[in-house]
Length: 444
Image (cartoon, rainbow, N blue to C red; front, side, top):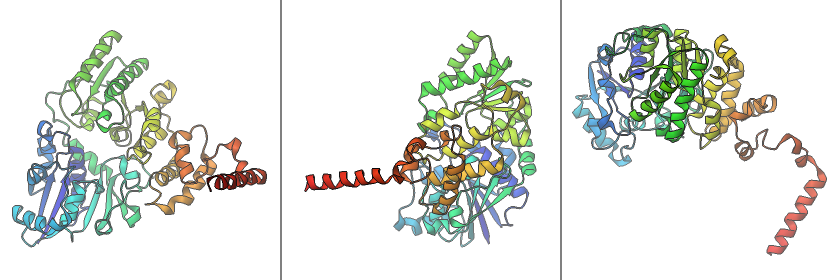
């Protein structure tokens, strides 16, 4: 007997799994379990994936739905992992609790670098693992060094083709091959959800603003994020859009919407704030937005790549400067959106939907940024990073790098061009050596 366990924390991820199952990306199994995990900061007050509108349309692909939160209660899914000595006890416990018996287990998880995916992968020590990615982070490096006992069991990475031609970096340190979930199958699954959210207003071709709740990730302050939403609104109005819909993040405070509503009233905008937690892709099908505006949401790429909708970004350049530490896992998603999509304030670029880098240039950029983020995990990318920085570092691409980071890694660009002669100058080197010897003599 074979049991496949699919862990999901979002409806978008569940839809990705549904599309993968519909196209036989997974081998047949005797039983399929959907293990839902509510990773919100306060899961007790935030709806889980199995409580979202439309979940029942996807539920039929699985034999059972089990809550990971209930299984490990009172611990939080993002903060708990089994102690090494307790792993055999936990596997025995789960096999009893979930009626697994002696079944062969196969896992499909997201974000294997962190819990809860890492924890469940550690418990079922002999199970092969499929990692599926539903966002832009799969194009970036693995954020943490993974224990080889887990990493070597990952046999593939399933991902959506959000940036055609761009190959994910995630898990390539384990020679994991990426496999695309067919786009038409994913769009077909999303079409099943089109009539979910009965309370959605009927609005045709508005400008749709996407909120992300970046302050919860300590990327922006609450005030800065509110101002970002106001910039989205003003930018949409400047482009001639009078009907505007704001889709807040489900966990964002309601007061943010009230501030935006007051600003819209002052500006004379017809603003609708949604309070129904549905996927952005449902809105794409129901409203056919004339423009989708966001910061670096994956939904910007699904709007463009899957539905052919006009898109615009806002705030990415300042975000690239603010992200800390440099290896912050949001850096590659921000980089991709910044490098590909038109800036909201550039009317001509938005109107004509001008794209930035082609896929070859974008691949070079992402690999260079990926190495700068995780040089110990991806040492083989040093040459690619050096080549990119040598030939493409200019006033437009500097935003993706930090001079301090390049200096610490001895990469091109570490020394300003006007000072590049110094390391090669014999006189300067001689003075430096003399200064060091004098310092040692003084200390001695």
